[in-house]
Length: 375
Image 1 (spheres, rainbow, N blue to C red):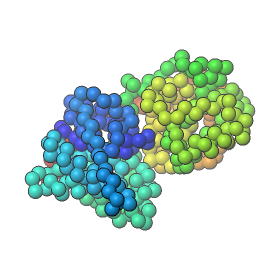
Image 2 (spheres, one colour):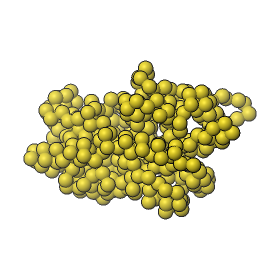
Image 3 (cartoon, rainbow, N blue to C red):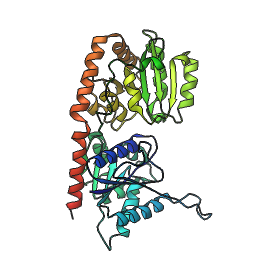
Image 4 (cartoon, helix red, strand yellow):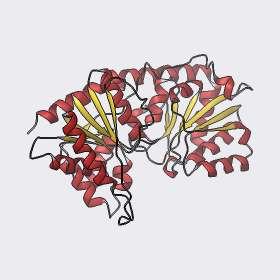
């Protein structure tokens, strides 16, 4: 099939999932066209069956804000017609599904161009519930030829918030378990913890919803019981406050702020525990990637996280903001080698058995066929 994919190309779960999906589809013989304003962060140029089409937005004095939605719709229609795309697959409802609908209507006289909208989380729980965006978010979802969500939690929230009656198919996030795999010897750990401390890791876009400061608090508590060093991977508005807090708590020498990283599959395996203290997660992609690497996650009992982590088996979930409980779980994993070995193996098995690409990508392929065949 020939598939057009649109996503936010920056660091964030929706863009990462969309890019990885395109890469996996290409390896399975499909032709994939990314249509967005910048090259997605995990998309290396020159890959077979992968094409990138930049959306350029003109800055006219008349416009106070560049009309990206319209420019995107025009580019979608142009690419769809030029390359005979079978469908468009947009990730994150606003504004991508509206642009896809406009592109669809632009080509309606000549051909049918179905589009699928994948809901990722904050497009529903934050953006979509904003009073000014609510009507158009609901409209864009209902006009989609197909709708998927990354967790059953998000599907239920979409129905509750928007009253959507369309079928929403749950297709979970996935992980390439050949790329994300354990390093049982933690061979590269000494690079970040030369004194031999065990490593904690946090990956996010450092937005307030990720509760990045909690990671620093957890490290300070953990270090009262056992040596540990924290790797903070990513960037965003909460980075400076986190750096300040580390100095305030006297643990700045035990935290490494690594910024944005393109190859987290090389970083995650050096860690012993992943911290994900988020206020909300529609799924928890970072936790899944960690599980595939045999790194048990300590997350929060919110959103779709309990669908991913079976607490006490392949990781732990604790209440949001309960730093004592989260810290205690981390200490258990760092000080009990048998527990860590058992839970790391269970995490890897869970990723392989439930969320590996071989299990999830065929679900997308089947859905593409269903949507294209429908009238």
